[in-house]
Amino acid sequence: MPPTALVTGASSGIGDAFARILAARGTDLVLTARRSDRLAALASELRAAHHCAVDVLIADLGTPQGRQLVASTLTHRTIDLLVNNAGLGVYAPVAETDPDVLDAMVQLNVLAVVHLTRAALPRMLERGTGTIINVASGLAFDPTPTRATYSGTKAFVVNFTRAVHEEVRDQGVRLQALIPGLIRTEFHDHSGTDLDAVPASWLMDPTDLADASLTGLDLGEVVCVPALPNTAQLAAALTRQSDLTRALVTNGTPADRYLPPTR
Ligand SMILES: NC(=O)c1ccc[n+]([C@@H]2O[C@H](COP(=O)([O-])OP(=O)(O)OC[C@H]3O[C@@H](n4cnc5c(N)ncnc54)[C@H](OP(=O)(O)O)[C@@H]3O)[C@@H](O)[C@H]2O)c1
Image (cartoon, rainbow, N blue to C red; front, side, top):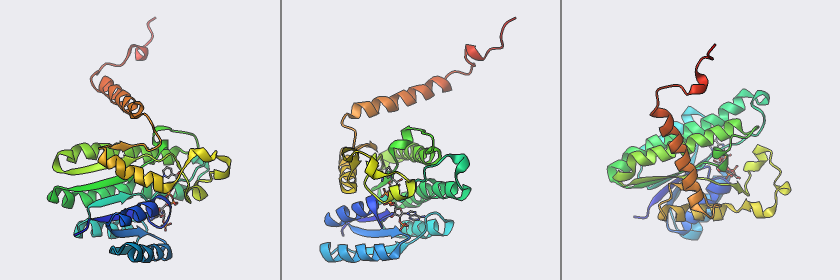
């Protein structure tokens, strides 16, 4: 039996790229997103080109019903690889952003990742095998103005993924937080970034990103940063974060600067 992957946000960009690469490698697919026409066209193309089984699941992961629909597939089917890729970034100051838009980012970028990871894990743990790739962002490490909510959701994805990986790593299941930089996709139509104003050499092709992510799995990368040549830089940054936490949880006394002024 070929392995089966479920890819969210498969109707464009990075999700579409994952679907194409996985199908070419002989993986059966469950593709999910909201745009049924795009998914149906991709599914037919992949079935014809690679003779793999491709199922389409139309679901709005910004709603509890949509998340439940996909979660139920993860609960009832054998899924070897879950790619939590669907995501949304709208860049504007928080005070000037429609609260519904902020809510949509949190529902999709955070809640969908949590619910689908939670739905996939029991069956993977029972089988002693399985992989989950959660697509984060370089902005996870950079709380920049106008990106506050997006950056916060992606920081969540990185921390969540790293922690769950530690919970299950000895049971045959692994997770990866994938950290794209600037990828040439429709994402920027929503984010408001003008890609024409960005030097071409800064932009990565979604296929190169998805390929690197799968190679990163083979390399055992839990945090996979395809644009970073020197992984020691990443390791040092993550170690500094852990050192900071260790320093503050092992000291119950407020630092001197918080002491009341002496008269
Ligand atoms: N492009 C970049 O530079 C970049 C950088 C860092 C991180 N990322 C992350 O990469 C991931 C993929 O983005 P992309 O660049 O490939 O963008 P994209 O081309 O806009 O693709 C986003 C995908 O998410 C799906 N989606 C959006 N809202 C959804 C909803 N409510 N329910 C279900 N599916 C939904 C879309 O499908 P439908 O509209 O058909 O539902 C689409 O397939 C995202 O998590 C994004 O945050 C991208």
